[in-house]
Image 1 (cartoon, one colour):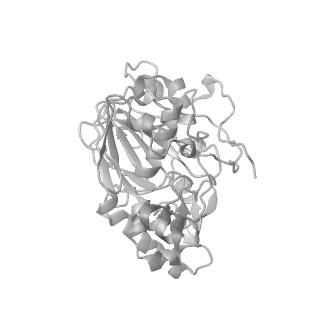
Image 2: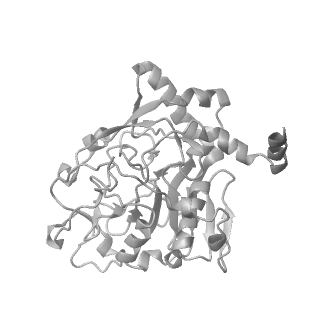
Image 3: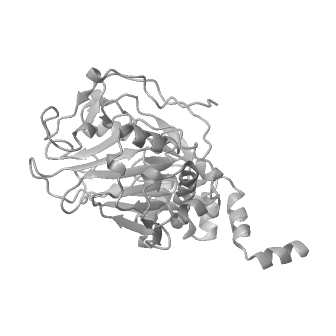
Length: 379
């Protein structure tokens, strides 16, 4: 197994970057975040290879005292199952210890919503360095790149750029639940997502907890999923994408467990999503479709484990791609020269998904009251 990632592309001269077609004039615009507009570099790169990942959450103080006791910081649960809103704490000022504890808290809560942040204005080098604390930074195989910083992914839509999304243009809504690039060998981990410019209304992001979705299944049904594997594919995404010359790597398919175990919390979650998961290994088409469609509907319709994030200036979301899914909402009207949704994502990769058949029992044992555990040991 390789121990290093090949995520990073070779240094590319700035004159090799080609701008996307947008409503913004890249050369003359006075738009504040014009330097974050999407570009691409023509040419293919080799495929990514598997690497070993050590999660920073494993280094963290289980009580997270450095983070949770930071002066002036408040942490408020959005729902019991997923989401915590944070005020009074700047991500840009976190120490290495606090970043480790941030990884742990994100693994526990799934999504952290930080308000009133200066993160969008600290500069590309600091943004990249912050993300790299959590793992090697992924470079999207056909998404845009920030010029000179391919690890910073602009998610951009205006009157010209992305006005039509081929993956949803024939759907009745803009919902597109997924885990980022689940077809990659090493999945995505503790991810940072923030807004640069958003519409006056609309353009929110929906998040859900696949841990809670798993835990709300019956114990017998959960056991039936243990040990199953499914194919995740990037081919359909590549097929419908415009501008094929933007692809820097060929699409791949990868097999991952249907139930995966988080390396830090040791909790299980469902690791299938409607956008990229294709078929359960070893099953016939109808058998696979029956179970996968049930799981998709269960995950997507369970409002007990859903939240909705409304983007305002200074909002930064940190989410764990291993235990969540999300969907942007394209519910806003786009006016030429006026409306844009400009986001930036920093996407560290994590471990290759795995399933630990002993983890669930271990978590249950740890959650028992101390007196009960002592009594069992005495017996």
